[in-house]
Length: 189
Length: 189
Image 1 (cartoon, rainbow over the protein chains, first blue to last red):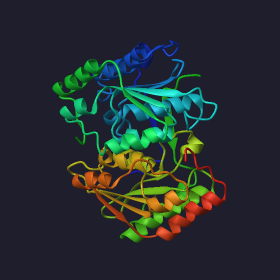
Image 2: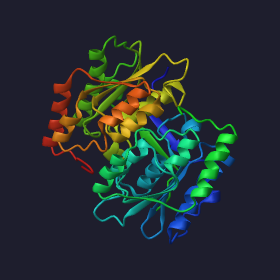
Image 3: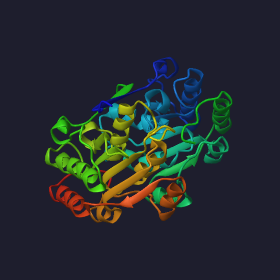
Image 4: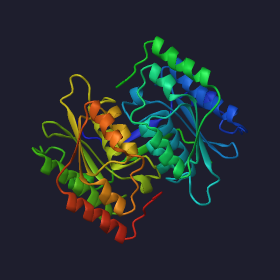
């Protein structure tokens, strides 16, 4: 076993084919469409699990995107939300999306976040989090969201974070189901 | 803003000066000494926050190490535990430390994990987690551990994970205090 001193995290090479980083997305529906499209492409192209996420500035400019990269990159941390935070923070050159002069950032994710990703929210500096498929949808398909409680959301909301179920739930749930039916790996489920 | 498509996560360049990857660490004290030494060196050399972590095989072989890299690498996810998991998984070539044929892995961390890092534990495949400084120690120094509840530990223990307060608490707490007194950045506190 050779010790690792660095790890490189990459988006799949098809990202620029399906994401227009220059487009403005004026509303929740158009922002969620980016996240759900990422989830779909990720299973169609077999580059990871059935999850996608995108970080937008409050004005609708795209700051960064992520897809689940756990299996291909052999890294259990790489949920779509985590990858999206990393890419957005790299693009703006700061460890926080919530600096005082920040325009305000929002995370759109194809599925309600797991305990790890919820725990990452306050560190990230994101102000608003919107999902398509719910925790119940994921649970029914054997994706375990981990130790998430009502108190988790209460805690985070008390710190100024906003959480909402958003558009495209049916589409996002269908992607989870399709992945399961296709024999996709449900790791550590 | 140029969109990011990859992010490289590096350990500080002093790691090989202070970590002997070939040494076997037979007991909790010697394993925790690695994690706490990493935390100390990280503040002395100003390469991140006052936290260190190390993943060991059950037989005492070191699989990977991490230090907090949030500020220098501009990435809110890079807590010591997360970095240690990434490096260990890269070294063994798997997204899980808990595969069926796994020898069993343990995480030693200089401070009780935050909500994000606890949420990362079941995904990582680690079997046992031991810390030095406690959540109370961290909280007194304005480090916010996030939405962690008794139910969080109950949930994770029910899934077979073991959690323990371990040796070197005083040493690890002193590092947190020293970092605060030195004006170290307590981001998103």
